[in-house]
Image 1 (cartoon, protein in one colour):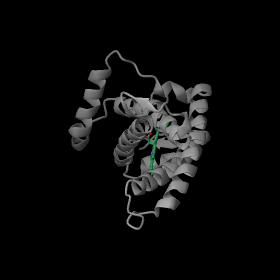
Image 2: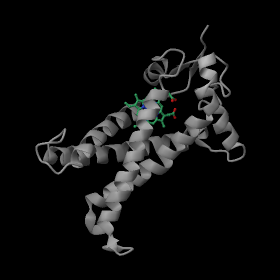
Image 3: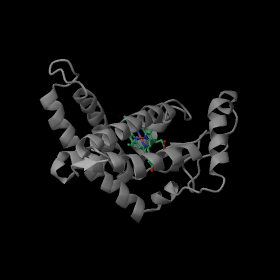
Image 4: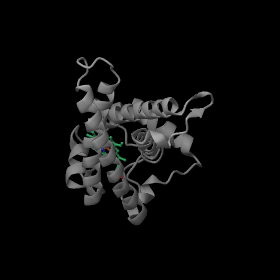
Length: 205
Ligand code: HEM
C-alpha cells in the first residue's frame, strides 16, 4: 500500500517546470557557444547567444518565484541545513544509496510532511539553489552588461575571470542536474517522483 503526501504546491511545480526548461536551453546554447566554429556547434552561434540571453533573463525572473515562495510559505523550512550531525547523516544516506537500496532496506530518512528531503537532497538543493544558481545568474548578468565588470583583477581581465566563474559554476550545475534527474528515478517506481512534480503528491513505498 502506498501513502500519498502533498509536498509540491502548485507555485513550486510551475517554478520547477519553467526552471528546468530554461536550464535545458541554457545548457545546450551554453555548450554550443564553447565552440568557435560557426557551423560546427549544436545551435548556430548567433542564435545560441540570443536564446542564452533570453533564457538567462527568464531563469533569473523565475528564481524570484522560488525565493519568495520559500520565504513566504512553509516550503522554505525544508532548505534549512542543520550543521550538527550533518556529516553522519550524509554518510548514512550515501550508504543507503550504495547498499541498503539494493537490499530493499527501509530508507534512513523516510519522506514526511515535516521533512521531505533526505540529507543528500537537502545539501545538494541548498548548494544548487542558494549558491550555484545565484553565482551563475549574477556572473551572467555581469557578462550581459560587461561595462559593469572591473577591468583588472589579480592582474587578469575582469571579464575573463567573470566568464570563468560563470562557466565553472554552470558546469557544476549541469552535473547537479544530471545526477538530480538520475536520483529522481529512485522512487516507489522509476517514474513516481516525476509524477509528483506534475500532480504535487509524493508516493511513499
Ligand atoms: C529536466 C530536468 C529536471 C527534471 C526532470 C527534474 C525532476 C525533479 C523531480 C522529479 C523532483 C521531485 C523529487 C524530489 O524532491 O527530488 C524535483 C525536485 C527539485 N528539483 Fe528538479 N528536475 C529537473 C531540473 C532541475 C534543475 C535544473 C534544478 C535547479 C537548478 C532543479 C531543482 C530542483 C529542486 C530545488 C527540487 C526540490 C523542490 C522542492 O520540493 O522544494 N531541478 N526535480
